[in-house]
Image (cartoon, rainbow, N blue to C red; front, top):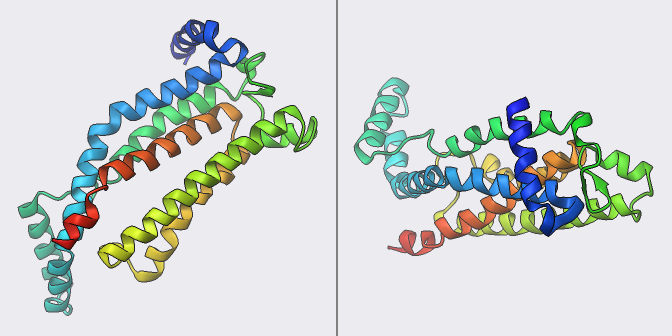
Length: 231
């Protein structure tokens, strides 16, 4: 942890001429972007897998109907189909799972006294939303930083929700998921608002940046999903 702290502090010092007292916050955003850039090949693989699953949905439905009374045979046939089409059911989880070490590293680093004096504008990076409300309220300096973050997260979540609903309409729902679950999943993007409210501001910056990256990345990677489905 101390090695990471020293390296990160040096990285933030390089940004100080541009961002002054918000240099550490800028370093968090840049660090997050670098982590997501490193994971982009996995995101591309996950997108290919998702498109393949959508394409294979009719065959999956046929297998479920054909082997409805034989779960073991159904599982065997599904695995054979995935192997033949080179589709990994876990591919979509890898980018999110591999982000966890970076998130927890930042979370523990910025939860203690090491963040004393480091701020995003008027808000301490080691503080929480509750601290901002206790020192100036919603319209105080720290409170306004959170207002902007909440508004940004809500805008990204709304974009993600609308795109997910549109994609579900195009593909006929999320392949392999019950209709009720498929309808709830797009709403989970709004859960980021709760995360931003409860974690230290430094960790919240990581979450917000990563959420924005995910929205843009998915819009890019799935831009041709409608045309592919139509064919």
